[in-house]
Image (cartoon, rainbow, N blue to C red):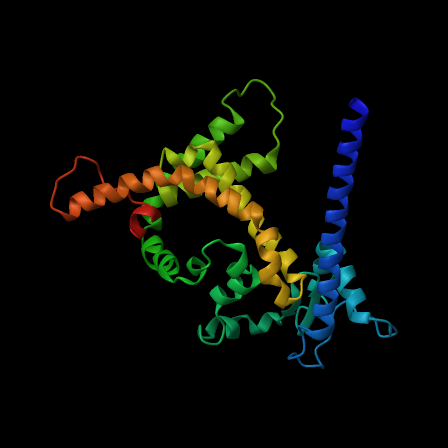
Length: 296
């Protein structure tokens, strides 16, 4: 009986492995087809040099440059910064397309361009594949949050600094401790991520909800899910993206649902208070000064 159970487990494991292998093959093949049929730099000037392409290479030089640049991206950026600082350069990177680096002297020209010519919001929406990676993708194109950030949040920065300082001190004390006599080993990256999540949460939906560890975990996981799933989608041929997106973004939907389950109680409470105020009822509860309240 044990042998039968072991055999079934091995068979199931083989099936899972084959599914993973098939998925990788599909991604690589569709990415190759995409690059072959829909070259991303077709509208770029041929006179602009492509970083990583060597003059004597003839066998898929750009594909090889793209692969090298991707594997050593940090080194590539460091090595191209000084020599290419004052020239136009194309940097092909797997999953990111062909990045165009402008000369330093063109920085002001770029900043002066109107939104109709250079729209950072649309660029990010395209880069992060928000139509597929963010459930309820209409939100990604809704200008309400962009308007609130550029107006209300900007005006409130001065009032929010003491609140952010208080939350930063609270998170540092909790995560790093108050004992100044003994050495303590700290895993820096995860703790700093949680500090940022807590401080940002204080600005966006207030205390004490911003200190909820499950809320922090789900929000951090979602912010990591989106660029990762977007990169995988960008490796696939565009017509296949709507088909593969529900599979590649399972983690996105799970973590967003977890986040909303925790937040919805606070949201319902604030909506009830808002309705009471609109009907002229006085409440003893002070209206919060955070992004969630501004959105309401």
